[in-house]
Amino acid sequence: MRRLLGIILFAELFLTVAPAPAQSLADVARTERDRRREASNKVYTNSDLPAAAAPAPTPATPGAETKTGEAKPAEASELKPAARPTGPTDNKGRDEKYWRSAFQAARAEIKSAQDDVRIAELKVNDLNRQLMTETSLYNREYRLAGEIDAAKAALEKSRLNVESARQKLAGLEEELRRSNGPSGWAS
Image (tube, rainbow, N blue to C red; front, side):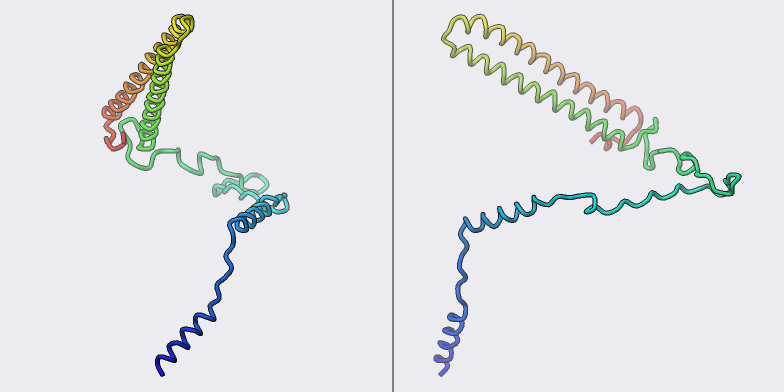
């Protein structure tokens, strides 16, 4: 009896769950293309955008009224104090944000100069390869030799730029040290 009940339940479960027809890749691509086409056809107009709110009036200082009895707007310097760093600063009043941005710019300059060196090295290597594989004597001796010399000069200039960028970074580190800024600002 139990066995018969188990078979009936299994058959009932198997027969009630019908497999769904699978979508082909072409059907999925077609529906996605239609969906994107509908989304890209939307044209926005000024009526679709929310209306801009009127700007808030500037706050008035108490007791500063004109002859008509209206309050006159306060001056910008009266509204907020001068833009001073809120956190710790060095001896010259520069904060962490200043130093981090200066070090970031110096490191970006070094990276750019190093990339220029890599490009110049690749150009010199390519020209040397062409020199070795070129069969024409004219191209090999006259044209490529001049290009190689120019590429080597550009490579040397790029290397000097890297060195000067590194010296700028070292000078920035020294300036931070002399102004008694925390060394963590250099990172």
